[in-house]
Length: 133
Image (tube, rainbow, N blue to C red):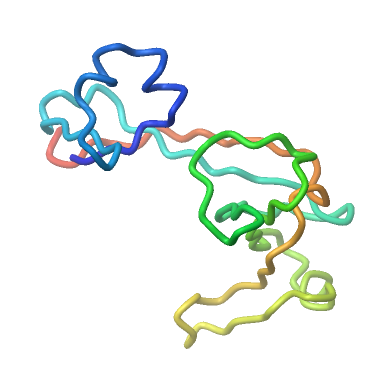
């Protein structure tokens, strides 16, 4: 399995720093995996939600793979509505509505300034490791 540790993890864990390749990837065998966690980052936008944070880009349009504080200027978050009031979400200015036939699947989403999201939280789910009973 190929993992992409954060710069903080690389700095804090000497064995990770010694093991990453030139692209920052860490290859581990299936047997070494102890737990599989799935993190769903969510937030509130304009007083509604929940929205899933699908990604963050910096002012140059590059994907961000490190922690960023909410007030950081120039950063944008791709947020996707995951609540039940689709009529409310569909009327939000700047949001695009996709149907089940699009490559994005059935969703309402937009790129918004990171400073406009609030109530950021992470929902962590433990998932089974494939091939283990």
